[in-house]
Image (cartoon, rainbow, N blue to C red; front, side, top):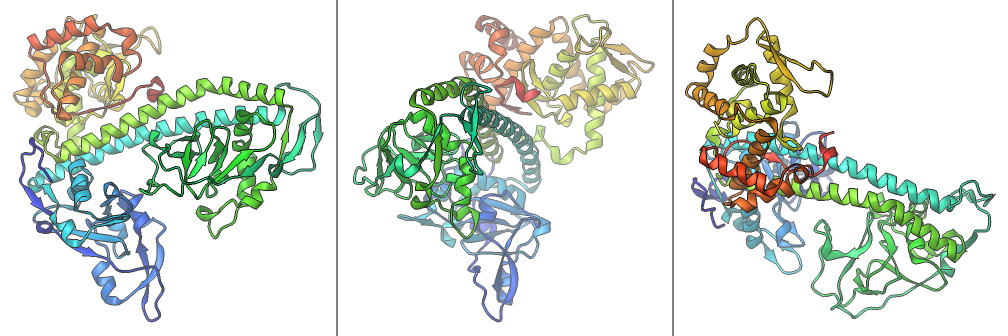
Length: 634
C-alpha cells in the first residue's frame, strides 16, 4: 500500500503486527467432533462487531480446532474470498460476549500483538480506503478471488503509538455511531415515504379512480371486491415467456424492488457482480415484463422502459394482449400481488424461495378497460411524483453521510486528524461536563447585556471554541443544521449546568419559539478561577474569540461558523479548498436553507474578514455531519 503523504506514522506489514489464522472449520457435522457455534462469512460481512447475540449456525470441530480458531476479545476477522477483488477483507471486531465462538470457513482471524496494535484500531485501519485497495491488489483469482496468508500479511498499514491508536478508535467509534444514527433516521423516512407511495397505488389499483362506484364480489381471497366491469385475466393470456440471448454488447439491466427495471450501472449497491461473459444474458425490450424469481415476493419485478440485457436467472415476458404497461407495472408490484407471489413460491428457506413460470402463469389479475388503465396509471404517477422527489433527496443525503463516514475513517487512520486536539479516550464524562459548564458560562458572561447575543450565537461560539481554539474536551457532535453547526445535546446540557451552578438561566420572555436571553443568577461571573484552572492559556484565547464576535449579529456569526466548518472539514479530507469551493459548500452542500439565506457575495465578504482576523481552520477538531434536508433535524 502506498502510504498517505500526510501519514505521520511508520508503515508496517500486518505479519509484523498480528497472528494470522485461516480457518478450515465448516458446517458439516462430523461424528465424534464437538458441536460448536460457528461464526460464518455472512456474520462478518454484515456486522462490524461480532457479539454473542448473533444467531450463529451450528457445526462441529475437533478439540484442537476449537483451541486454534476459537475467538478472543479484540480479534479481527476478515472475509478472505469474494467474487471481486474490491469486496474482499471485510473486517469485524470480536466483542467479549463472543469469546469461544469458533471461526468458520472462508474467514481469517487476525489476532493483534498487543504490544504493537490494539484490535479496535486494527479494525478501523482495515476499513480505510488505502488498506482496502491494498487487499484488492493482494487478492488472487480470475472468476473468484481469494487471499492467501502471505497476501494478508503483506498488506501495510500506518501504526501510531498505542495511546494514539486508542484515541483514534474511540473517536471513530463515537463519530461513526453518530453518523450511523442519522443514516438510520433517514432510512426510516425513506421507508415511510415508500409506504405512502404504495398506499396511493393500492387505493387506485383496488378501487379505480371513482370513489363510491359499485363493486362486485370475486370469491377470491386476495381481492374479494372489484369495481363493476373489471374482468379477470390469467397471466398466461397476457404474457408469453421469451429467452433471447447472444447480445452481450447491450446495457445490463437489473430489477430493484423500489424502482423496477433500471440500468444496473446506475446503482452501486448491487451485490451481484456482472460476469465478464454476457452471452447468456437475455434481451429485454421496452414493454417487456422482467421478474426476479427469487425476490418477486418483495416486489422485484416490473415492466421495462429500457432496451438491454438481464440475468439468465430472471423471467422475461412479452405482452400478448392489449394492456397499458404502466398500469401493469403498478398492478404487479402493488399488494396483494407480492404476498400472493410469496405463497406460490417454492424453497427450503425464505431467501431461496423461487417463483416458477408455471405458477406465475396461473395468477389472476382483474383489469379495467384500456382507457381506465391509462387513467389510473397517470393518476398514480402524478400523485407519487412528489414522493419520489423526497425519496431521492433523502437517499442523496444518506449517500453523502456514507461518503463522509468513509472519508472520516480514512483521514483518522492516516493521521490527517490531529488526535492531540481530539482525545475522547482521555476525557471522562465528568470532565466534559465541567468544560461545558465553564466555557458556556464564560461565553454567556462575556456577552452579558449584549442585545445581539442569544442561543444561536452561543452554539456557534461553542463550536468555534472547540474547532478553532482546540477545547476538544467539549466533545461536540455537530450536524449541518439550517443555522450552522449544531449539537442540541451540548447546548441543552450547557444551559442546564450553567443554571444549576447559579450562573445564568435561559429565558424566553415571549414564550416558546421566541428569542432566548440569559438572565444572571446569584453566582454570575464566579466561574473565572475554574476557567483558568481547566483551560490554562486557552482561557485568554476564548476571551479574544468572544470579543472578536461580540458586535456581530446572529446571522453574521452563523455565516462565519458555517464557512469555518466547511473549510475545516475539507482540510480534514486532505483538500486545499479555494474560496469558491468553500462558498459553494455552504450554499449547496450544507443545508437547503443556506441558499435562501445567503448570497455568494455575502459569504465571500465574511470569508475575507475571517482571513484578515486569523479565524482560519487547520483541519483539526470536530467534523460536521452532512445533511441536506430540513427533516433531518425534526
